[in-house]
Length: 80
Image (cartoon, rainbow, N blue to C red):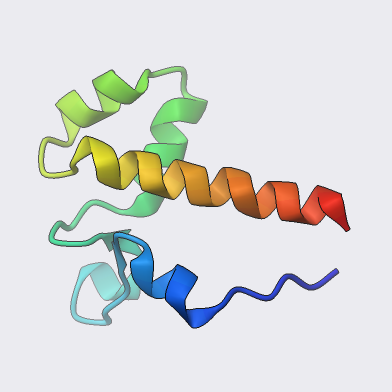
């Protein structure tokens, strides 16, 4: 199954992918915090507030935007 993401959706995300920052790992824009850190922390049972306390350079709206994007993308998968 293929999902097509338009360029505007991707550019609106608070994510940076730059080979000079954490070897190209997707990070929250303006930080060195990998997006995976959010997912891994939630997976380990931490709350969003605990994640944000642990990574104060990540803004709440950035984390929520990434989670909303993930949720909406998964919904698109199930709608097909």
